[in-house]
Amino acid sequence: MAATHNLSSAALSSSSSAFFAHSTFSAKNPMVSLPGKSVGVCMCVATSQDSKTAHKTAVSRNANMAKLQAGYLFPEVARRRNAHLLKFPDAKVISLGIGDTTEPIPEVITSAMAQRSHALSTLEGYSGYGAEQGEKPLRSLIGKTFYSDLDIEEDDIFVSDGAKCDITRLQLVFGSNVSMAVQDPSYPAYVDSSVILGQTGQYQKDVEKYGNIEYMRCTPENGFFPDLSKVPRTDIIFFCSPNNPTGSSATREQLTQLVQFAKKNGSIIVYDSAYAMYISDDNPRSIFEIPGAKEVAIETSSFSKYAGFTGVRLGWTVVPKELLFSDGFPVAKDFNRIVCTCFNGASNIAQAGGLSCLSPEGLEAMRGVIGFYKENTSIIMDTFNSLGFNVYGGKNAPYVWVHFPGRSSWDVFAEILEKTHVVTTPGSGFGPAGEGFIRVSAFGHRENVLEACRRFKQLYK
Image (cartoon, rainbow, N blue to C red; front, side):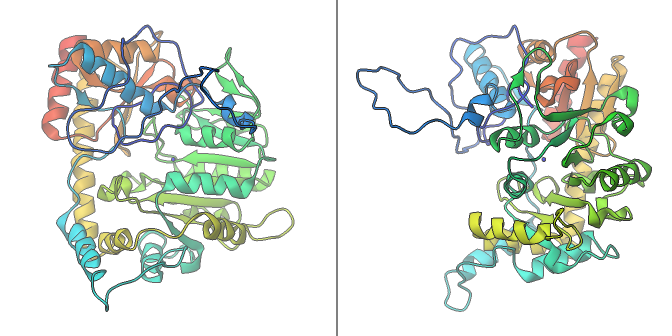
């Protein structure tokens, strides 16, 4: 796939974010390492500004970086989790915040990666640099699996190290002289990458928005789909379905409206379908199911939430040949140039895993993992529904969006953490329309999800 504070896993990078709301929660020492499984963590640490000893270069700081607000959402949540552990060192903290998978990768997939890894130690099996766009068998199988009968060709598909990375590569294609629209709330990377590329104005604290970004408000009142008649034209439209964080998925009629809106305005849609395999109704899994979408849309997706590849890193982006800039130049050719300049291709071991994911046995195994997380989602939804909350999402996504009317998202986050030792994600971290909500992730071991729900019931009964 937004500015505030960050999440409960240690595995995220620290960039900066758009929406940071005030919270009454405080901590004595936010810099502490997470317990549990061994995970490499990169932390940003302030350095001394002592003018007597610090050497300064003559290089000016990128002014766009200075626009970013506080820290990227998920590392900030992790920081607060760490501070909580300092205060309650014996507490069993349960993390239902960050969207990081918890269940083992199916063996049919890991065995394929192990075999490819072992082959690298042989003369016959060794390979070095591969095609930046990805290995042809994997590109072909992605097309057959996810885009059959949609006229998406193998060379429209670019294999990558994940959708998040491709979002920034796409931003490099677009450059700084474009206008941007995002769902509000939405995945923070869309906004932050726009800020870093220089597409935005300054952050406006009174409305918790950046200038020159159109925030398309998505709330229960409009069914989490923006009123496009009130949305001004922008060059680029970021749209995620099923949506992170609300869990809502757009209908065929809604996506048809979006494609027609983009075509009318000469805009490009960047469609994030990272959770498409969680859809259990008739809503489209791909934007390319909509007539005319190939002329106005790019689609990015990932194996992360299907196969547990959040650490393995493997995704793809589809840029159809029919998608052209205003001068008639194909967008795919510029994206290919960016990929070849910035990227040496996804790991050959990861790509072997991707091929196995899309085998009949691999697809069955992935659906089993997805089914497990969807059962977690049902448990969480049933819990909050039983407590009288208005609850959204869940059906087509691994996220539950819970409303706490009139309350600060960060205050609710702090209350739940303080009183139940459960980490969630404050909704305002995904945009101003997320204020008053929290996101609860279904990525967790079953016993932890059940225990967290028991604690929720004890707190809010």
